Length: 104
Image (tube, rainbow, N blue to C red):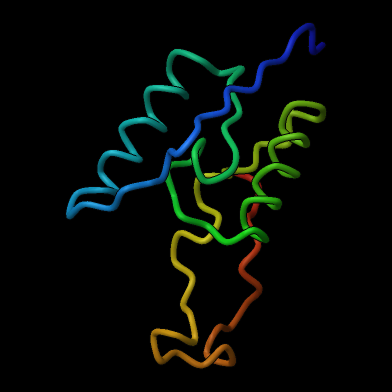
């Protein structure tokens, strides 16, 4: 049962990438999973990842499903290994849809 909610908006905040950026993301993810099982981050600021709008919306939708249905989606995995045409990778090289799957 959801009894309360909160949105924290940060003005002029932007994910900053460093050499060990993914290590920091994993530290945040682990800490939230251990101490705040009822926190469901979404979007660029919440996931500390520069996702495009589609990925951010997908994270929000799946987070809602996690809250309402306890669906178990790992929203941190959205766009974690996507390849882009800008990087010289053809979209046809992806063998499956880049859609998060429920954690087992």
